[in-house]
Length: 370
Image (cartoon, rainbow, N blue to C red):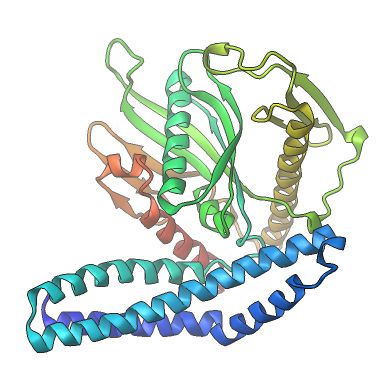
């Protein structure tokens, strides 16, 4: 990269980072962190468990934001010095180091810029993700399992812990459905852009005539509930069934009836959990998932009322949202943003950062009044 290009890029990064610092209000973040530290050190903090959980969670979130923004500022300042040194001494090694750091810093600042767009009520929450196979038979079940791998690989790349709560395996191959939790700050705001129907076109590995097959899988993303959300579920509104956990092909993985399925009678929502050995633990986890889905349903109903009042039909952006074509050509295309790539192997291996970034920017534009 030529020297003028490097300096132009540094100037652009400086402008972007300064804008991020202004939006996040770094001095206010530091003051908030200091106040939360005082609250967290109170000797009677855990007398109120719900409040203690809220305070410690907020403190971790705010401290993380401060560390990230201060780290980016420090890296940018150091990079300016490194570029000046490389330029004055015409040192090839310093130039190589500077260009490598420039690429990484540009990517990390872009990610932080997108993070500032996640300002929704629940965006900072952890996420519950459910994937279901839809039209396409065994190919759709296989496609649902491919999507599970895609998202778990994405989480692994970002160091996000995740836990699979329940898996319903298809008879021949793949899965009928799976629900898993992503336990990272802003997981909901980030992954909620993935909600909708994902379409796969490929030569079916299950067709002995080698014909092309189109299959579909649905992705649903909800925020993890907190104790302060107050989603009350009366006992007479649910039916609880217990059964034996099973694995692929119907094989039993537990000798006791520890798996739990809960049906919410008024809405027909069904959730299940079989990842714990204890029936009580599975029931508690399933209830948390049900509460999250009811919270999401409540939000969608409120949004629908607002859209109806506005005469807005653009609220249904979550239907068919991305197409993955593996034959007769290679392409993944987001149908909302028109962003596309020919590197299908990377996408299926969890490299969807560009799709998510474009989607979040697109969603923000939809929310912004013209």
